[in-house]
Image (cartoon, rainbow, N blue to C red; front, side):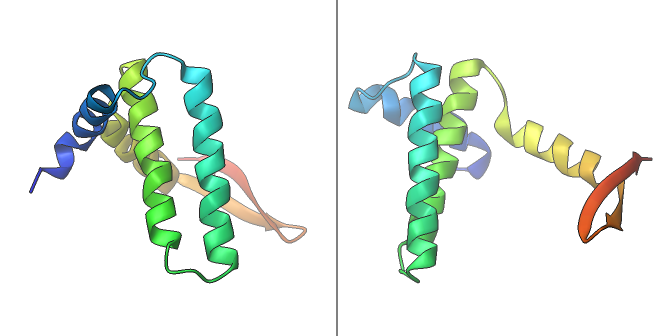
Length: 101
């Protein structure tokens, strides 16, 4: 079993080996959007494939990150930590960020 920390490289290497796009970032964003729509449809219809469709979305995101030279795992951790410090207030029924500590 591969290490999850290597997932981005594994995903990109698979794209290369299978001849999938590895240069057109705009296309990858569009395809990611399509995968997200498929995940929503699977959820909406209560299909067993919802998890697989969400995995497809993540695979596309990791692929885009590799194309852009970003470490998506590191970016996710950084963003999770940033979100922990944000303060929200319910304003008119909507959670609204009011500050960051």
